[in-house]
Length: 301
Ligand SMILES: Cc1cc2nc3c(=O)[nH]c(=O)nc-3n(C[C@H](O)[C@H](O)[C@H](O)COP(=O)(O)O)c2cc1C
Image (cartoon, rainbow, N blue to C red; front, side):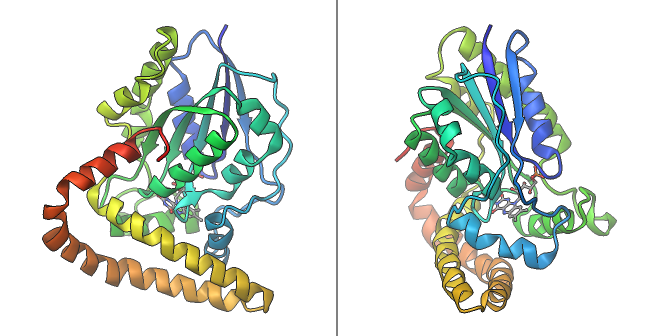
């Protein structure tokens, strides 16, 4: 019987639902479901200062302490990891798992599928996850990335409403529901079916192409553009805040980052996007398609 290890972290339960639906087609498998539990839990709902204070450690991929995981076996036929990006990086609990020595032993020479439940910016975080899995000797064979399909800026408002109230409801009763839609969470089963039959037919090589062809890793051009620029700036801010923390000025600089982020998101990025769409995109169409194909895949550059 196939042995499957699933590992995930979820504050709202969204990723739990995604993982449960994805796993459901593996009828004859033995599952070891494991939650990643940070020793010092992150708040949910979040308060504003803690939310932004999480940025430097997320971006610099500094792990937190997690509760030891009682694995049922030493080796598995498949490992499924459900995770969310935090500040364009893997969430800290997931970084902590991927850097954990026991997990690294388990993942060695084992196929891995990642499931992402994001707002809409997961490209950079998946590059880090790909790297950490590869460094541990695991083989990423599939990735399904679910995201909020609505407008990017409205999505910022609605996700903050969700994160700061703990309620996945329509802000002011009129904005769309935040996060991944109920339909997409339900539909994730189809990717689970693809994965199940890939294992049955011993054809993992083509799994990701099939997931991509069914819409499991959609990438919007505007998000691709923003993400490529934003991560570099986040790294600069994260290092600056770490440096200032040593001088006892962390609170001030985290607050400065918050205002910077709001300004960049709502003022700078729409202007840059407009220029990009008119002046650059028409002449770099092929390059953009190539990048999208890369990010939709499971290989490392
Ligand atoms: C601190 C924090 C930072 C986040 N940053 C991002 C991000 O950079 N990109 C993104 O698509 N979603 C981001 N999100 C949304 C999460 O990826 C995720 O969709 C949401 O937190 C729900 O996940 P859950 O299953 O843990 O409840 C962030 C959420 C939190 C709490």
